[in-house]
Image (spheres, rainbow, N blue to C red):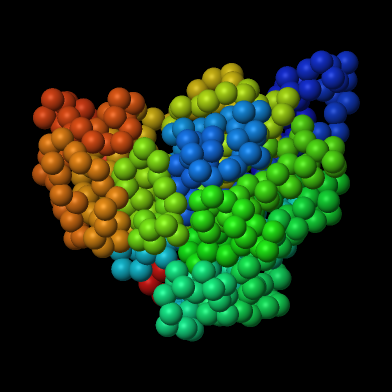
Length: 483
Ligand code: MG
């Protein structure tokens, strides 16, 4: 399979819109390749909840940089991930495909662990691999969690460089003390996680107290070193996944305790990235996207975040598990405002391909859609459906405003993430298969409290058909999480 490159001026139309008033006299033919290919930066938090940012309603955590980014750019309120836990969510983002298609989800092991041998297969084409074929420089910074052995590492998957912890920051735990005490005592040595430069371990255990700061410095350095070419940077923070650590400068800055400190440092990091783009003259040629891999980890109480008004949390298929606080910024090109249209992380690959004039490979099924019309404010996307997978099973389906739950289950054992509902509903630790699915109208009832299944059998029938058709198109592949 060879990726096909389109002409370098494929985006002339977009850019004449983007730079209107400044360079309108410059004809499309005079634009350089660099100017017609935007840079892309995806900033991916870990376990950040829908309600954790000021601009998404948090009353006690300060996020001035993200708030400003959203006001200048777009605040997306129906933006989803491919799965409610780390590994499959990341596989979905980078490949534009549901993790079930790459073998990157499992009913037995929810994510990859340090003893795992599997990872993202070489047959998958990541955003980095696709853009690289079209002349992009690429860098991955931060948490990977798509396989820590070759050929599954970032530099095996189209990234020119990698700097980060290759899996979750709570893994390789070598002390028995609980996460809360270890975090409060800044006992990073309790987690013997490696820090990698490309494929080489350069520090172990990674000193997580400075990890957000060092990821930021790395991303800033990559912006400066790659700026002569179009570039893609994937900055995946290890935090606020527990255990919580922050730099000396962010200790006790938040009224919201250690979790607030961690979020405020991530917000500072976003500010540093945006400041660097401005200083380097790249501001108007760079699309920056901020989102999270899954919802807040309620198991860890005050060391986990909040999904705000949404029900559920990390690990589950209610909205709080998979709907993420998302902000896009691209001064001069993007149409500022609130975007309520449905979109997912899987839409980024087709969208980046469209915006950069890179043709999508035609030998595979994509679950993502081009959402550039929503970014540019000149149309709609084709997305009308979101599938909520837990492991290898579809637990729920959203079509338009309506969401049907076919199976429900507590996120991580018993917890209190679920509100009082009408009629009362018990969420069990084992999967409950609903003969009549639960049905919610997410426009009227985003908190999923009022089951309207009885009033709308025709909508349930329609969603069932959508699901059946979807499942018929899933082909079995080797499971990577069970290797
Ligand atoms: Mg996560």
